[in-house]
Length: 351
Ligand SMILES: Nc1ncnc2c1ncn2[C@@H]1O[C@H](COP(=O)(O)OP(=O)(O)OP(=O)(O)O)[C@@H](O)[C@H]1O
Ligand SMILES: [Mg+2]
Image (cartoon, rainbow, N blue to C red; front, side):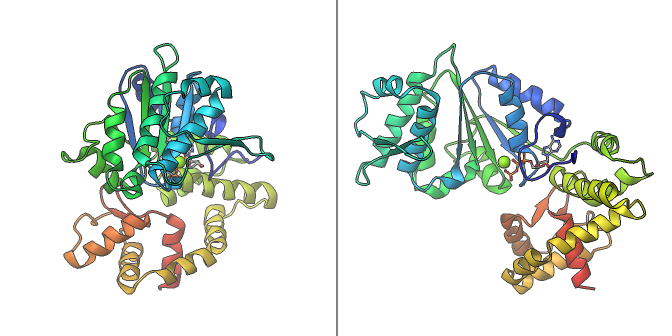
């Protein structure tokens, strides 16, 4: 079986490093504090959190803010998660204080309980009721862990939702929140700006790429044959980005295993991947305006795309900000293209 995996949460043998981060998260969960985890897309937030969650038997709730459409919907999702953890009767008894009674129905196909509130119900009341139910079920010897993904969306759902949520959260005891986000600037504004309701809510951790030495042996150990400088070549292209490293390694492994290719296998795997994504990249390119295309091309064609990019001129700055919001550009120590295959595609089409 292909020992490389990409696109979903990785666990067990597919997971490497993150030793310090795992310790830090575990320690936070052993305290009354909350944690905020920030990284660009596909850098391993969910996998890291899952690893830590797998090590505990504490009850867990996971909500993705991307799929929350309103304050009432957040309350309903919270209830649905609680219904999944406990027998219906137990939760029902804890709900006697509810001012707006939700309707609970069983999905005949999946058997899952569905929760809906009357559309006219007051959203603040629904939220308060649902959060107080959480207070009731969590206790010192049964401490909940609540993970909220893409948390930066909180500010887009409804005006004042962040403030409401924060004031309810800060009164809660015996539970930990882990709040994840992939929009660096929005997450920073939410947790590090003095005027934000979530200022200093929890320790902010920024997840980086996987350390070179670790990824090097991870790759070398899993390849079907030892080809000199194979891992170096892969990491040179992916710059230790976990998702792209796994994807390129997976392609290399397949070519070596099924086609017996060893000669320039990394280069050929790279070409294959760029070809595979050609249509997506072309579509994506069409959605961009001229300035953004120019900016991306500058980043891709620069002889040293990973250097000298910290000083952007004011004209290209707004384009960079836009491209960062869209996730195509990330800023580490300099501005860089997020996707090394897209970078290659841009080079191929702009020479
Ligand atoms: N610790 C790790 N070891 C090896 N590979 C990893 C690790 N963490 C992540 N990856 C690779 O990166 C991919 C993305 O990981 P994951 O889904 O955890 O990231 P994420 O930050 O939650 O992404 P998203 O922004 O899409 O939610 C995985 O499918 C896997 O290929
Ligand atoms: Mg994730």
